[in-house]
Length: 453
Image (cartoon, rainbow, N blue to C red; front, side, top):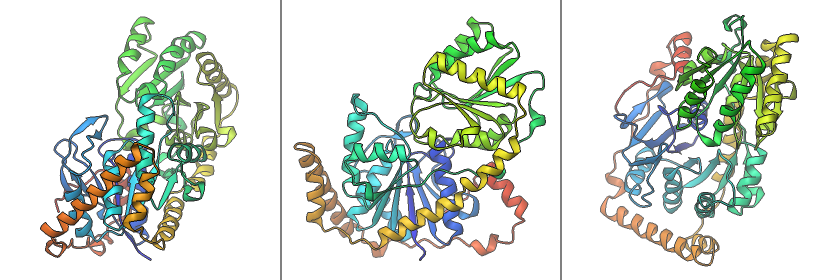
């Protein structure tokens, strides 16, 4: 049964990251399986309005205020009129929100349930329980997931974390991992510098990604192994620490900072190395290590979150998120590259079926089938669920939901849905005669065409 699906998140292209890649690839595969998929995100610079990406994937770039790291300012009700117009215009059946950091995601699920739509949520991150930021985020997640049809997590560790944070029943949470297009990360052993063993790091340069550990271990590894160099891709507030480390230890010829890397250039960076290093302090899945293994690199990673679930043991060396243990793990990987014959092509062959977007789309489709048969909760049941979120918070949540319901009634009266023009379907057949190589090239580069609706 085909569905009309609305993916919502603050994080999408042209921003680069795991959530952005997940949204794009999943939407493409669901479209190929006969579903209608649109994406709602916030405007990025002058990219606002309606755009079409490869294969007619429709993206609404909504003008909202961004406050930090591509996350928008929570308006609660300010997004509702635009969201309602889009949902009615596109005849949406299911609202699918992504990422707990996304304000648009939380608001879309609230408004979607008020409008009687089915809603599900995919969690891509792990959170703690003790610091103020985690406490507030977890309470917000509890509010959103109190009235959700189903939740998807990208690893079993992520599922345990989400179930505890939002006080959910494990029966209402499924595990569907990320995936990778293995054909876009084919190994090329000839691309690496034969005079050096190159360690590649591609990550956001932020504290959560373990950049302080990276700053600490690079000088030690360079001192221990004169024929080792680093290529570091990515940008963020910790870049200045890496630059200062390079200046202090005079490592300009052995530590290359290449800045932000576009997704279609990731493979070209990866194949320049033999080892991929991930120093994250927390990870729900870490798609970067899968891409690196597909490109034929031996992976060294901190053993945190869902990372141990991702790769077969012979592709990865684990380390505790500690300086000394990381130095030992990287040194062991250097020894393996230097004295043992790696088989990078076999990594790609092993992973291309294990992590397939086609499989992810099929499993997500089963979730949609499951929630499509669930009954819509009456208003009193929704209030009961929100009331159970806490002695004080429950009352606040009930007021927020009740006001949202009244606002919806007001919008239905002032802007009747009969007056909203229905969107025309994208002419897929017109583009089915495209040359396959041209289509692959476009998908590989992820270059959106700037077609206004």
